[in-house]
Image (cartoon, rainbow, N blue to C red):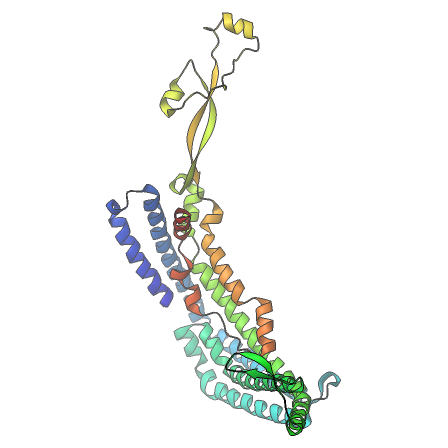
Length: 383
């Protein structure tokens, strides 16, 4: 809805600019406004058409889709997750975790998943057909089915981050360092024997508990990352559909001259004796470009009236906008998505215990990512 609101706002602004053509005497500016306006109209019409077709498909197959979603949610989000938690509690792959902490983690999260499974079975699943028929399959509904994964991830992330922070502080204690919060730096500090002994005990305790904390955090962090990637793929498809330059692409293929991207001179041969082409095109003979049709120069001098010399006439041609400039908004959009979902950045965030969040929708909204070739030409004119 916010995307459609942004498109309608831009559509009204472009319509006003097209009506006030006298305010912009430049032809290229008017051409950009014209292409952007009809490209927005095409996007809205195509979105309504595709949305109606997809909505009809959902309404006709709501029972089948509801049954499929119930099976997937029960098998993957509930049963498989409980099996994975019990598997971690049984020393997987020979990794001996802390028994008491692992049992606490496993029991707590298994009960939490079971509670959410009961909510799905008794509240959401009986009305799943109505939800699909009324609202359709949206990304928010998919996130609703994975609320328990989000809660478990938030709990394990907080514990992991606190343990990591505590081990870092105790490691500075062993080195005789202390973090100065006033100057935001690490300074040297002298600790007494009691402080060193107490720090050693705490560090040993955290070191033995850290593998268990890491194992459960890794499980839910990977599940959270998978959920974000699924949402990101859906957001990318919607964003690319909302920014597809359909009208500009059709004009580029059908009438390239309606998308001027510059001019260039094309030198074509012309007969000086005729002069009709030079007169029509306003061309000028290029010095040194004259050549005779006959290879014998002596004969040409004696028979100049019978042989017509040729010249190269510069003809002004239109340079259409390149396909790279038409799809420039895709480059900007892909740069935003690639920077946010960079694998190295996500891996670093996971290791440091930072919260994994999808890209905000306002970062890939229609009015922020650019429209057609308007943003490209505006940047070109400013440069």
